[in-house]
Length: 305
Image (cartoon, rainbow, N blue to C red):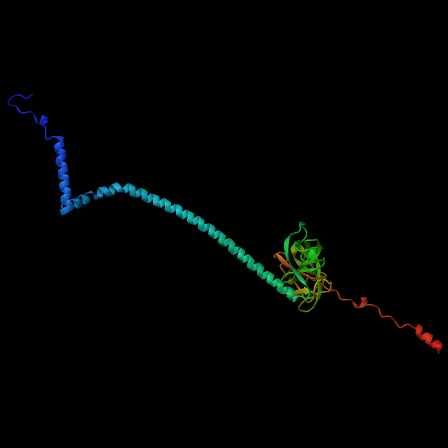
């Protein structure tokens, strides 16, 4: 209730009705939309507002961009780690294949050399694989994968592409035992290839070899090649056995000390060639004795006369 002659304070003044305001602003919005659509009147206003608000927009997007960059970084690290693991496995597999290929190439070369050695020998030979070494730690013997069923017999010579390896000492149905050239109980008659000097080659300590029972003035030099003499009836003559390493000619000794080293890979290779038994030739003293002409016929003929 107002007093006569006094107007109400501004706080109590009422403006247009809310419905009128709504209608006004809707009409204004529609007019602006139509004007902008037809005449592009608000384009500069939008550009100005976008220019002013661009720093604020970038600041608002910084956490989102940082999160996306961090996710991409972690994802790339995971991919790189997986790729490195895959490449490492591939490298290991390739290295294994390369080593296997190298081993196969070396084995093929050795088998080819063994076959060439087999063709050069007059005896029949069989290629055999070394299975394992004998259990006796004080002997130097190996087991091969050929036995009675393959026609192997005790006493046959065993060689590789370089020379003598050993000799068959025991035969089993599927395997055989080979006593190596460096065994303490092994000895073989040899001769110096340079001059034909014959001697006995036997095992010394630590798998070495030595020429025994040669005088101090024997014609043996360092580097001489020793080959089989064939006098034992087991080894074919001319097979390489060892090389002279050192020659010790002390006057106080009855015999010279001649150290030798095996030519063949006695304890290094995995394949060997087993030579067939050497056919022993009949000695002159073992030939059948010739029958002397009988004198009975002469005496009988003399009596008749």
